Length: 507
Image (tube, rainbow, N blue to C red; front, side, top):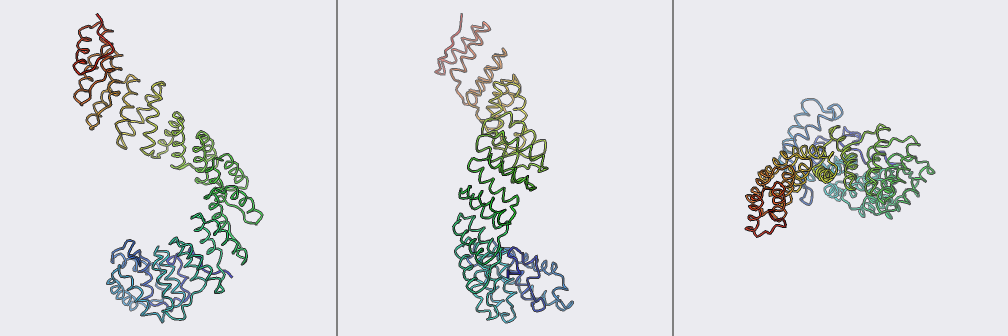
């Protein structure tokens, strides 16, 4: 017969763990509250809380459990609890032996149910080392505390939390040698931990033991194995198990399908994952956002990010609203494979909904828009809007500034280009020579030779030596305007800097 206790239950959320509350002393209640507050473990690691916090935790516990269920006898018992709380406050949290000394003083009054509750509290409070220490001392608390099925189940969970899977398997073996039959929750806890560490052979050995003793696996048990198989790349095995689940009278749930879909996507078989989704829908299962996000990731990895739009439409049809991860994964895939216009559409939809776009992706989008706008000028305004949004939420690096300035020049927004060139310098950035040349070139194309000369002066002042291209642009423009003196002056300035322009003044 399976254990009446559930491993995943919280001690504090299930007072029925204490089978005989009349026999529980107030001291045991307070120790249980004390050890459930994260403290330094037996190895001296982990963080500690203040003693005042412990006092409050104990007080809160008393409030949670109604006084009637604890059989407090009015004001007198409350005073006794209060007095004991003052004693507890004096215990240094670093000295965990004090907790065990309190137990030893009342060892004769502890029941096995109390002991199991203490173990469960420690495991739930993420103190597996303390739980193991408490278990190792069980013999000193009297013969009445001989471990039972529930004790072993707790210790298996404890070892899984410690990532001591060999220890967990030893407890399982010891449990069965003592005539106890683990329940499905205990088996599943161990199988799940083994699968997460890639120990599939051990996991299936435990699974076989379940069958031999007649413990019927649940869908959650199968889901752990499905994820484990996919984790080590055995996708075909996972798919076969998924199909066989129906024969075993265990109906797969959406998590079963999602696990195998994820496995297919990771090995470049996203279309087969989509087929599994169709099967799940035919069964009447409701895909969740994780199910769809798996497909976004898969298609992105395969270089087919635009298939994500098909997934996005299906999500909305099934009333599964995309989350930030859905949009971010789709956007990231589109950017990775250079689908800039499509990425811009996703970005605008994200912003419209109110989702934040992280700085890295926004920077990638902005650079992509800038480069594309150099040949497709209708994107100039979009690029500038993304730049303004990015500037309001994060610091723009000097390379991105250079891209934006060139884009503004292409879009003939020279006033904004000059403003941002000066903004760069005020921020401590030194624009690259190509950035200066882009501005000089754009100004000259508009016939603004005076402003172009000002930019040349700014180059000097910022410590940049104009390149041959810088001087060639200016000489060419002066020649175009028939201004021989201006062309000669620029040519002479270049020679003084040791630069010989290709262009020469024309008479």
